[in-house]
Image (cartoon, rainbow, N blue to C red):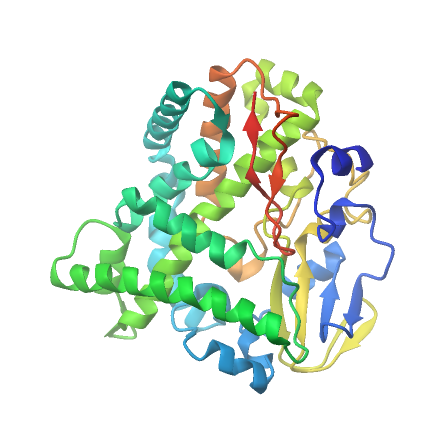
Length: 399
């Protein structure tokens, strides 16, 4: 990895890319006031047991820090909800992401990809994120939700403000800088909530054939969802519905630049594209960590974690656990099996994983057709997202 780190100037906070983990699979970070899970099997255990490891992490945030989140509600926030409410809400949108529904989107995904690449060719220069990896999934998810894809500059501004932050997660008493970080994040959240509230209000008045209309008309236990739940649901779908694919596609192209022999192989055999994508998900895991909170005292990885503790599950480290993956620092699309945890596991397994995989496969296939070589520009360096819990490029110029 030393060559990769130096070549792309990978941020130091992406520790999993700078060398093997030398500690234990589960460790307590006194400085941050939380537990870190690094091992593959331990991560599987946490993600597979929602009864012991709750997705509601707000419940363990110290009271003195909660004032910063006074405008933040978990209503409809699917990634932060436990059973049985989680199952009821997830069922509402699962029909929009079935294998057939996703497969039927392939012609539209291909059409959008070609249009974006045509527009980039007319401009002369090609920067993967701005020209393809960001707008493609945003247009797809916006059309599914029923919001104008032409508003994607707004979505990008909100997503960047929320996710591209360098602050490390900590439960210890916040300083002024940490408080400023939280307040800065609340501003785009309020703006996005207001934006989607307007669309929800319109759908209650005049339903259409889209996901927002499905949500405003849906009933759980005989009652319609309140606006707050629908808005938060929409935010999750809009953000997660594009960010994952943006990082997946950027990371996969970066891997093909870093390992040209793999690029030659996949050019010659396009049936290998899914394997290349899966290995890039393991190698450059987009969402590097997810949070959980302990509901009771638990034994994990040879240590005892008390009840009501924050647990950070490092998917990026788990995907490089040598106990599970031979030669984890090697990019090997032929790895079989490749049971990576990039999309999570259990009841919170990424709802949009089939869509992200399809978008990545279609876009990469067309990109390989259109460009004789996928090669980064040494005079215009790659830029990584600085967020410690995310692995992805925010700028990737190609020659």
